[in-house]
Every structure is written in C-alpha cells, then in structure tokens.
Amino acid sequence: MTLTSPGGDLATRAPEPSRRRGRWIEDWRPEDPDFWETTGAPIARRNLVWSIFAEHLGFSVWLIWSVSSAFLVAQGFAFSPQQLFLLIAIPNLVGALIRVPYTLAVGRFGGRNWTMVSAGLLLVPTLGFAYAVTQPGTPYAVFCVIAATAGFGGGNFASSMANINFFYPARLKGAALGLNAAGGNLGVALIQLFLPVLVGGAGVFGLVQAGADGIHLERAAWVYAGLAVVAVLAACFRMDNLANARTDTRQQLSILKHRHTWVMAFLYIGTFGSFIGYSAALPLLIKLNFWHQTGPGSGSGIEFAYYAFLGALVGSVTRPLGGHLADRYGGARVTLLAFGGLVLGTLGILGTLAMLTPIPAAGGAAQSAAVDTNTEVFPLFLGVFLLVFACTGIGNGSTYKMIPAIHRADAIQATVEDSPERELALLDGTRRSSAAVGIIGAVGALGGFLIPITFNSPWVSEPLAATRSAFAVFTAFYVVCLAVTWTVYCRRGQRYADAGV
Picture 1 (cartoon, rainbow, N blue to C red):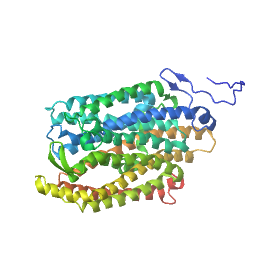
Picture 2: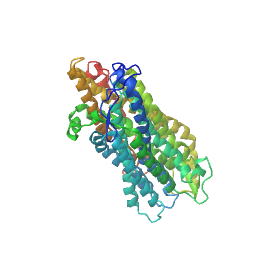
Picture 3: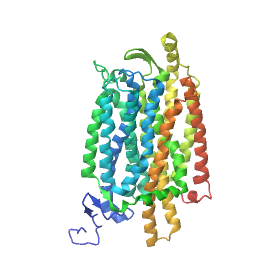
Picture 4: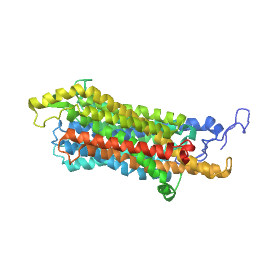
C-alpha cells in the first residue's frame, strides 16, 4: 500500500507499512533515511513507549520480594535472614533462566503478541502473592514457589529489548535500548519506593501515617495485577509486530556458536547482574547492619525504606546515559570506564564496612549501641554504594550498544559496500544481535541470583563478615571484567576495537 501526497506525487512519499491480521508490519526499513523520517520514527516511538510500560511492570513484579521480604517478619512470618536472602534470590534465578525462551518468542510469535502474553503472565505471581501473604500459616516452601513465578517479570526484559532492537536504526540503537531498559529498571526503584506506602508501612517510610491495622502486603499485589491487565490491553491496541523480525528457533540459537556472545555475557554479569543483585539485596543489607528492632513496628537506626530505592533509581537513570555515551564514543570505551568505577566503588564499600561494628543477634543495649555506631557510617556507605549503582547503569547501557555493534561489524567486514549482500547481512546481523540479547541477558541476570546468595555465605557465620567477603569477591571479579574489556574490545589492533565497537 502506498500513500499519495495532495499533489499526487507518489515518488516523494515512503510506502506505509502494510499490516495483516494481528497488527503485522510487512515493510520496515529503519536504515532508509526517508522511510525513517516519514513513517518509521513515529511507529517506533509508540512501540517503545508501551514496551517500556510493560517492561517496567515486569521489573516491579520481579523485584517485589526485594522489599516485601523485609516486611514479612512484621506481618507475622518467622523467617530467618538466611531464608529471606534466598527468597529474594529465587526470582532472579528464574528470571535469568527464562530470558532465552522469552527472546526466542519474539521471533516466533511477534513482539506485540508476546508482550501481551508476557504481561498477562504477571498475574500469576501477583495473585499468588496476594493470597499467600494473607494466610499466616503459609509454609516457607510455598513462598519460594510464588517467588519463583515472580521471575516471569525478569523474562520481560529480554523479549522487550529483542523486540525494540528491530525498530531502530543502528545510529539510534544505543539510546533507544538504553531508554527501554531504563524504563524497566525504574520498576525496581518504584516498587522499593512505593510498596511501603501501599502496604501501610508508610509510618516508618516517613511520608504518611502507617495503617492502624498493620501491614497489608497484598495491597501492592492487587495494584500490580491491575496494571498487568492494562499492559495487556495497551500492547493489543498500541503495539505492532514486524514481519522482518520473524526467525526460526534454530537460526536464533545459532548465536550460541559466536564466541563474543559468551564474552559479552560474562561482561553483562558484571553490569546488569550487579545492578539487579545489589538492588535485591540492599534493603536487607541496610536493615541487618543499620537497624535495631525495639518492638512491634518500632526501632532505631536507619529505616531501609527511606534509602533502599535510591540505588535502583540511580542505576536506572544512568543507563540511558551509558547508551548515549556509547553512541558517541563507542560502547567498549564506556564499558571500560564503568568497570574501572566498579573496582574503585567496591573498594570504597570495603573501606566503609571496615568501620562497621557487628550487631549482636541477642538484642538489648549492646545491639542498640552497635546500631548507633554504624549509623554514623551510613552516609558514607550509601554514597559509595550509589556510585557503584551509577557505574552499573552506565555499563548496562554501553554493553547493550556493543551487542548490535559487534554483529554489524561482522556484516560489514563480510560484504561489499552498497551491495545487496550488505543489506541482507545487516538485517541478519540485527536478527542475530536480538537473539544474542536473550542469551547475554540470561547469563548476565544470573548475577542477580549470585549476589544475594554470596551475601548469605553459609561458610561465614557472622553477617557483617559475610558482607565483607562478598565485596572482596566482587572487586576481584570487576578487575577481571576490566581486563577482558580492554584486551578484547579496546586494545588497538583488535578486530572490534578497530571497528569502533
């Protein structure tokens, strides 16, 4: 189907993307400047907006346990710190494992269609959560199963990023993917910010008075269940499928043979894995090291609800910055800078942890005195931690710019400029990079499981000592990531370094 101008000049207008049943766009050429300006950009922006909304909800549901776990004891569930750390780690593990099938689903069913399905699946963890927290006799194992279904929200990220990757031209991918990811990542910050208010724990949150009848965690679940329904309807009526994004599963899985899929997956553990792992663990870290419970609903020290959301917020808003800087200076250079910041940041956290006093488990005056001493160190601890979050956000944006840049460089090197083969190779490179997003995202998200588990190291009996040993491990890991980034992608004479990846 073509559009005519008022004067009837067909040659001056780009063809309108044709659709078939289910809002399929047959003609999509984002690298064509005329097509992009006249037709592509408005459609891409509309799909980006609603993709961000659906992904935002997915992240919120995925991390709902990160903050609600700190309220479970107050609602009457007698869970130990070890059980709570495991509870916040389980959704991250499941979210990582299902990212691959979620990515493959975009090529199989279409981005708009799969957004509807993935948003609808969020009803499973939200409704299950709403029921379980209202039943005082709910066993811990049942909570673990429901927490596992929250991992559905983690899968949304991979399918959303794979879908949006097809909509934008190469020169705008870094910014577009950065915005898409940041909108999702903000779901972590907002669930940690608003859940205490929604559930009636806002008295300790400091915004409004807490509910007189105690904490009601199910309220947050009902709100997000309703929003999931809105996301399904929005995807149905406002998003599109791209016909040229259709691929078969075997073609997508061929990306497993590309060596740099695994190199980038390793680096993504250090950026996104750190972001999601620290976001999940920070509320409990603050509560265990800076809070003293003096009675039901009361205590002294640092209230986690004032500050826990700040880390995810900083990591989210810096992600588009990382994408923008990567578009301008190259993803590898920005990633290298991010890992340098992570090394310095975790060393700084180790320095603040050395100033803390272990909090006795027995309570009483000794526990109160230890909390008072640690409270004085908290501003420094939080400030350095926010620097770490900023570096994870920048690294998230820059690594996701590197993925399509690597496959674009492969296509350019293998073909002749302005040839039909070049055009086909670039399209295939986009498909391969979208498939790589799922693999890399899945492996990277495993960091969100490993970090809370490391904080709860079973071989270290004292919680503060476990936290110190964990950050020592993290620092060493970031040094390795720094070395890999420099050696493979930044050192002059390397293939991708010369291509400006």
